Length: 163
Image (cartoon, rainbow, N blue to C red; front, side, top):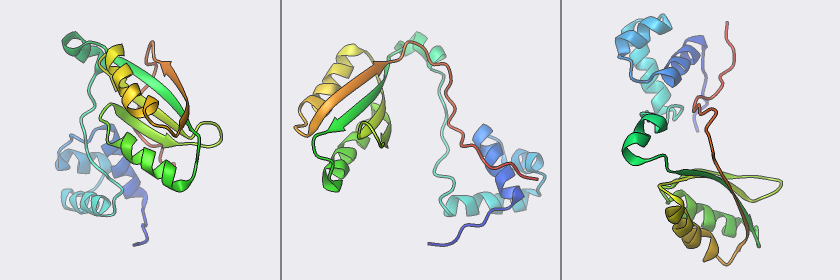
């Protein structure tokens, strides 16, 4: 694996992209205090190094709810009966394939997994729960916490302060 080295300009570009990835290269370069050609090269390198996984649109659940409803968000804790690597890997593979599972974390101590799940409604959640948790013999315990309000959602990673 290639060693990754980042300078102050790289961190500026990453911070700006985390805030608004829809900017043109010209606008990004201006905000980052770089020439457009230099900025484009840096963004390409950051992508090639895997530091930028993908660029996505973050939808507004409140605005979209008028069309599709609010849906149901749950934070789910899963504890397995057997925690061997093969059991954890097998279940994680199944979990990440489900589009309703927005986030999947292996955690310690406590439960083995913490999930953030979003479904259209309670019947859809129950079907997902039956398919993933109830029918899985190795799942010992499931705790689901249902969101009543989202206070904050921010996908940005905190970057070290520079210069």
